[in-house]
Length: 252
Image 1: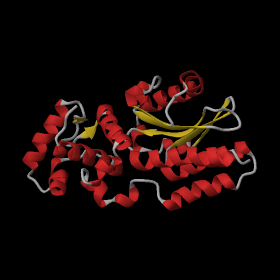
Image 2: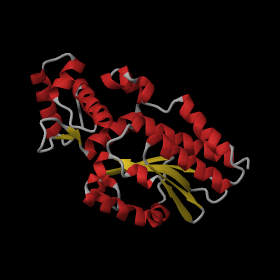
Image 3: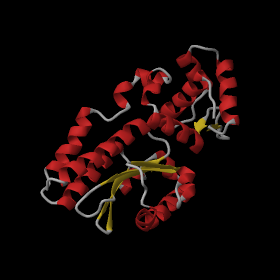
Image 4: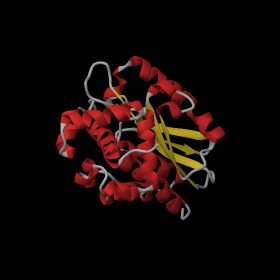
């Protein structure tokens, strides 16, 4: 899919703004960011909508990202992080909040290193992810799945819809056997909305990192949250959690 530099910047700005404010993003906001007219922004948004990357909720003139839009963003972030140095005005202006900070990484490391038992170290890393991201945290511990932060997840504005809560519950009920059967093969795996093999209508993103542990060469830690989130920061935190667990548990 070929986007112009401005279209890509507008898409990224919509994703990042929507992650912060949880309301559809309008042309006036973007016009100020890109220093062009609202009419120019609306024309570009129409092109992005025709590509299936953004959508217009029927109750608002603003736009929200689609699963395809998030996938384009995440792929770009994963493959070429340097692209974001100039493409997205919001990211360029708010660099501090995009990737996990040294302080957040130290919180994870301290929580893991303070535990003598392997299972407690993994639980500590999950609990830290819950506190730092506001998402549900999860990890495999042997044949068991440890989950924390369900109440935090459901305080997100997306889950005032009972049908979406039911879809998330269905996903969680089947998550352990799915992880065991699918065994995601990449060090960091991101499943967005409809990409989830179960709970397709829940509009959540599952971000998980594979790591080696005394229990298995394919243990997992990650978070489950709404598709509306700060992917750069959360992906960085989950990746770091997997790395620190693998390093630390090899010494226990």
